[in-house]
Amino acid sequence: MSAPTAASSAARMTEDEAEQWRQRLRERSEVALHRRSERTAARQLAARRRAHGLIDRRAARLARGRTYAFEPDLDCTQ
Image (cartoon, rainbow, N blue to C red; front, side, top):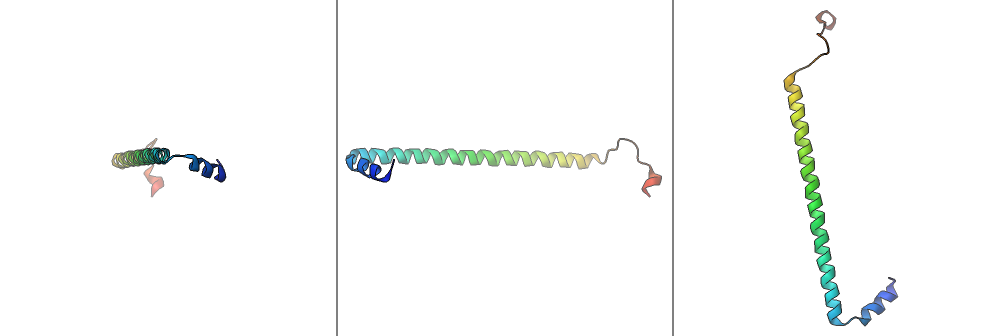
């Protein structure tokens, strides 16, 4: 809607209609903010779970020690 059209449309609104419009806008804004915060929380939770899994796998890998496809040749390593 262009600016002149919006202005003329607003001029035609009664005060009650304008208040209802502002109320709907406020409600939609609150819903959008709530959804955005839920998405942010879900992303942060997923990141924490992913990081925790990576930490667990890294710790398990270190606890296992080195594994080789074949026994190392000690003469070559010295």
